[in-house]
Length: 138
Image 1 (cartoon, rainbow, N blue to C red):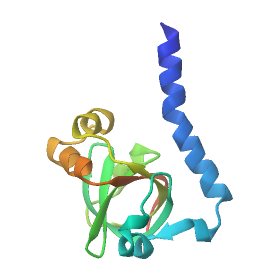
Image 2: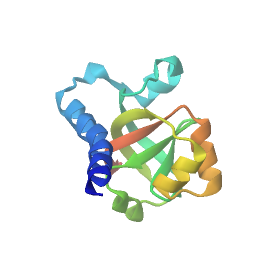
Image 3: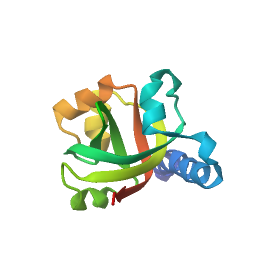
Image 4: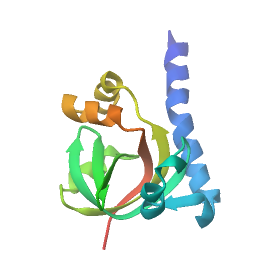
């Protein structure tokens, strides 16, 4: 009985560890800013490191934020969900993380405890940011 549980834990923690290692080893040229990312959406790929500075929190649902940079929005999953308790809608934040393919709506509702509408919205997007750093902007 313990093997499936151990395998599931290893599978869930492995991408986060890879993201963190990538953040330490990557140079600035390997990281896309919000302006670069949204100007060339075809460059969005699974595993791409991003840095979104001074983006606005548009919504919070379960363990997920929806942030905006100018007219573009993207979902952000922070490494520590308790950070969401201290962020209000309308706050400006800086995000560093890795792009991942968006899950299906039922999976998003289950894994991220999202509302039905926000889970559907996430499922219609191509990618979300798995954030290893989420801080309030100055």
